[in-house]
Length: 215
Image (cartoon, rainbow, N blue to C red):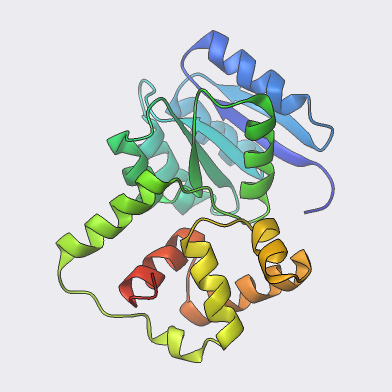
């Protein structure tokens, strides 16, 4: 992305909210345009300001992070959601991904990692840890009846490679480095993959990869 990325940060703990806002706001290319103490305030701020990214705590009063994420995904799909959680195995993380979040990050993260996470999510990448990936696979297995996405047949060999890398949690920059191509080339491949699969985001690409047995 070019220019400044606008961000709304939501957390019900004032100290945490101030800390994360300061970390994100310290980056020259990121701007915190609003903060919210609960899900209701968050949804209202996103509707009013239409930020590029919403950094959302899972557990909040009045409207929790999952419900807020679901509202944002439907009402303001242009805003990508990065969910914050205290525990890597938090059961709410998987629910948030299904609600429309683009990824999650542990609250004990460093300032550098948080800033990079916001940039990645804003750029269309996905932050999906190993535990969340396992939850996706487990859920698919429990569903029993699942059919591979027909669009996979239209993918080129290179696009399949990129799809596999996405399913393994690789970012565009990492994929570009692995394949020795430019990041713009990877972005082009990702766009084609999303189009051919009819996928909204990289989370759906991961699901499609597992359904097709590519991972």
